[in-house]
Length: 72
Image 1 (cartoon, rainbow, N blue to C red):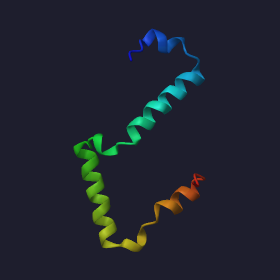
Image 2: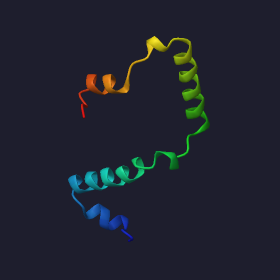
Image 3: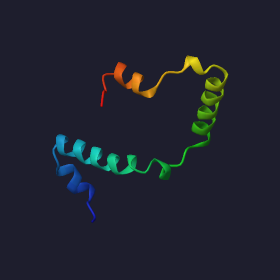
Image 4: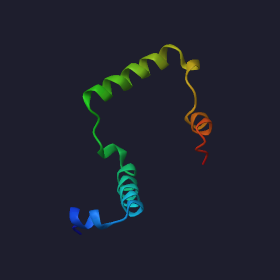
């Protein structure tokens, strides 16, 4: 399937947003296929080191999501 930029520009804003969400959903199902950059990897390593030093300073992802109003 091939969609041209002209076709995309003809879509309404709502349709384009939905298209982007649909595309993102296909990417999000395979996070291992998205390589990390070296700065991202370094930041994750730094955060893991900090967590290893003081695990009680961290919070569960479910609690963070709830605080943000994204309950599932």
